[in-house]
Image (cartoon, one colour):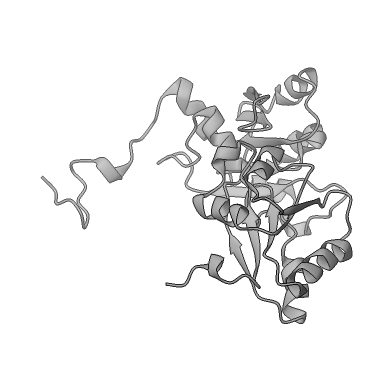
Length: 263
């Protein structure tokens, strides 16, 4: 099988992971180590990853750049036959704004590939030592955000998502924590519903705030957290204190499947 790393005229979109430089994938790390030009999201990507670049590689921080400026850097490098890595925080497919970049490359006939990464919701769950899906509690995980400067489709407003219950993971919303709580309380959640906020999950300065929808906003404000945090809401968060209400069928001796016959 031909690896995406074999084509030097192909732009690689790489997920850097949530912060810890060791949480980049092996393939993502190989891409960095073979790059000539890296365009990275400097406001969120751990700069320690830039130490993996080979001698002579050039890194550009995209935080102050516009889309057109990012594309110009890509096109110039590709035209010169240089390997381009576009390094995004977390996983590029979640709030990564990569679709517009890929569309521009499509329009110019430039090949590209995407190497996934670990998104913040999973780093936050790991920090909390929490499974997001539990039998009898929640079998659905929703990744979403509150409406702020970026609009959200009306059918996806938080009060509608809250009607579904399940485990809700909210990106880019901690600055609106009071509005988030108010919206969620109009759905299936109650003031007693467990909630947690993880600031800079997997970074050295990571912080965790836990509570319920009744008090989480006050706790978050008291902690001084206003950005770079993931909100998790749902009854699964009670499992560490209340116990697991129902065990998975996967390892149940009375449950058979293709790899284990019923005893």
